Length: 149
Image (cartoon, rainbow, N blue to C red):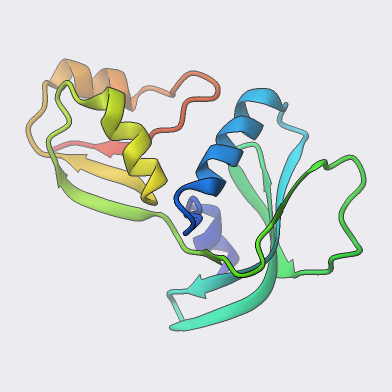
């Protein structure tokens, strides 16, 4: 998968949202300078239709800043947030193109992120609520990007 494609996608941890929880903890507890490093995971390359095993992904803030072959002994100093990705897979964020969020955001947003849905298209909610959701979330809040007609 191209680095540009990965930069625009969030990551799904296929073991019941483990990465989403850890990334949320990092986002709420760490500054922009601290990184989350996922070592040894397999990246699903949707552009080429392949799986790239034993990769390292470095996330700083809300951006993927590096993708390369994992090197277990070379974890950058000062970066304490290292996740063992061996036996796990990373994929680009998924889209749900037909949702009706309305007043269900308390459970809908966390459930979407845990399932790897990073962007949704609301098809009929209250426009004032949609405008509110489209504004940047508070620090530590994970929610999908919301697109509305």
